[in-house]
Length: 136
Image 1 (cartoon, rainbow, N blue to C red):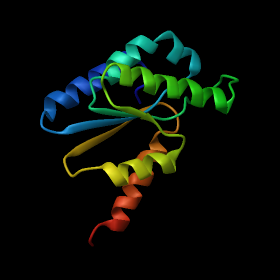
Image 2: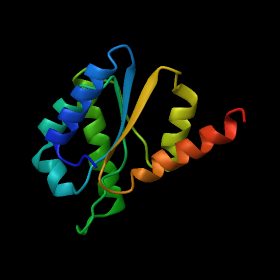
Image 3: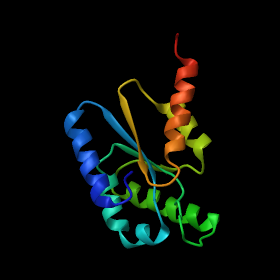
Image 4: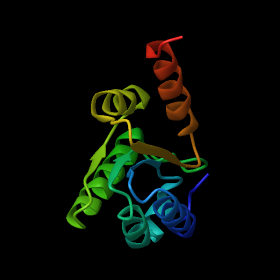
């Protein structure tokens, strides 16, 4: 549950300190359009602590925002993170994220799901697929 840049920063700094040899990959679902717009610069700085960021569409919660706008603003966030020299991509759904994780994940990678909306579904699906593919 990391929907504020301070929480994102603190979490990523702690993970970086605890696992300095690992590649930190964040799957981030922004929570609320207004919050993302208000703290965009801080989110960019916070997420740039990671080695790579996968941005999920904004979870609008109580806001009346179109799906297209949620996608657009999240795509912009990914592009701005890239401008800070941290690789970032936009993924439009759980399956897209899972495919990225499956095809690019390495044994020493740490994947963190961060957000306050439906991001838990990503963790659950990745975990389920890894269990399917692992030896019993």
